[in-house]
Image (cartoon, rainbow, N blue to C red; front, side, top):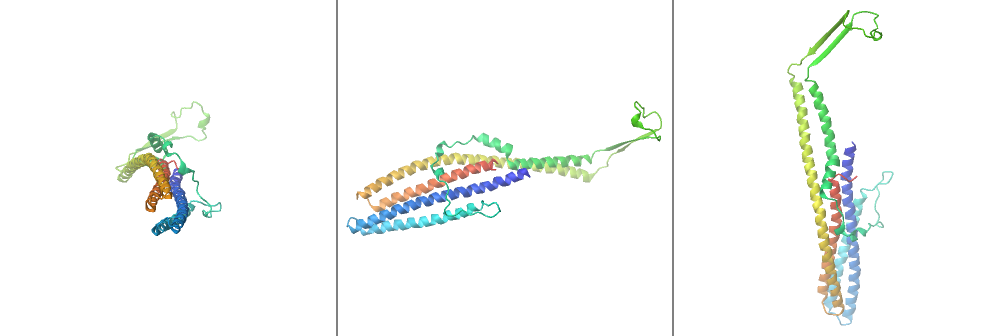
Length: 316
């Protein structure tokens, strides 16, 4: 029951980790879009003033407004998704009196995780994860206990196939305290003894039950082998996934910094009247798309790390 409890907790905490990182990621996306909407509102007002002064064409105000409305819609969608993930995370929160706890709008996740240096994030060697899985995973421990119980059952059924021998002895005299006669030879006079030996005839039911017990052990042995193989493959996959996500995050961080530099340069050129609003919006959209993808990769990294701990049976 202890290992069954650990297995349930291992699965439960994985779901909780996934819900938490979705919640944290959705809030970060909402915050990025909220900042983007504020910037575009300021830009739209500037474009309107420039149009009124004759420095910008009327179509620029339309394009600035379209960009602003698009970001507002994305912001509202991000807020709805954030509230949905808040409710999903609330599923795992309970008060002391077994009443469900709900995350209010005023509760927000920590944002430090998004600034983590993922390239230097230390992950143990694969062999250590595999060793931990084989020695301490609750699923394997549960199967081992089942094998022990089946082995006891097999021995019990084997006993019914063995010959039975009963030895009997009776001392034929009254008032004779054998316990007080040290050195008494019990086989001199007045005794009776005998031996009963019973050899079972072919016991097909007993033989069948014994063979059934052996087949059960073999079946559970195979089940343990395939369970162990499946767990090892999951550990290898999630370990490789964590390593790969570190590389992807590093690539997207470099790409995001490049897009931000291009956007900053385009904003400067736009303020000097050397570029169009269309090109500026294209730069901004690409930078925003990369920012959202980067946040998704970082949240996925933590989820994959949780899956790696789950596959090795260490979430408890």
